[in-house]
Length: 412
Image (cartoon, rainbow, N blue to C red):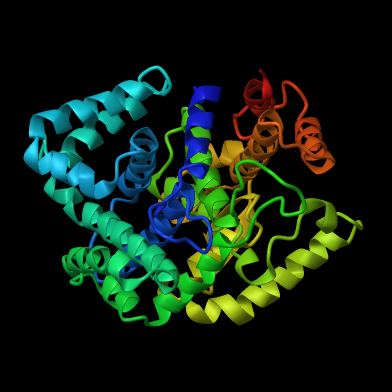
């Protein structure tokens, strides 16, 4: 079961500072890096699929979560230091990874997930070989990791003397050379259209949620999107539903991209959106228009429709039905039907209501943690109360009794 300890441990990703030995014009935190890494992985993976190669998206999704959990446990050890320990002291590196797993043994109650985590740590540490069928997927995620790190360095190098970053820059460029056979990576490094799309999405790193009130920790829209994506997958695991591969993929990336319009509209806070009865629909209509005008032209044709499917009516349970004329039509469906006749890749199913639950769970934690840290306001208290009151006790949505999780999270 997804429990309070696991959720709050994940939330620590918002408090881990990156590049904190360099001058930083803005905060760089681990949760934001996790989000950008997966958006880059999506683009690189889509190019590989276009070339006819198979990508194991479930493995990439889980691996991104495991990487974040490992980083949370080892936040005080820089990556280059970890690599030195691995090369020079392999036995100690093995013990270090065992220590990481022990930190989560009593937190991750999902035995299958913990087993996958253990196997992932063993394979990436070199204790077990990576299966051949996973090698490309692992390279896609690793390439995304390196590119996301390079983008962070590029964003802060303008305020750092060259002497501070010259070696870091050289080492990163050497690492990136290993992945330039990947078409998506080539286009990103040479700043073609996918790079322009990433640049636009990166604006979500600079947009602070709850920006009308002081709060600890601050959370960006981009980091929030990854947190919601991770929670969506974990909530669905709790239902014990065996999802088809496309459904798992859609749930994660629908959550990851759910606030994509805010890259061009900024974060319009909920009270403002709901100032009038008609305003929510008006805001949504304007968001869609701006996305089509400013974001869609930056997307490649072979994945643009998919991202639009993710972001249009993002909080509804839905499928895509093929019509006689060859076009597809989006259809809202009940959760029971998603688990039955539509739980198949051909219907492109999405558990949008679960994404909404995860979105509200994230907002609740953002408000509640700050209040408990002693930084509070009427906005935060009102937001927490409104979120709790939005779900009656015993109410089950998409197989999830979310109020039970809410009450657990806010309990002292």
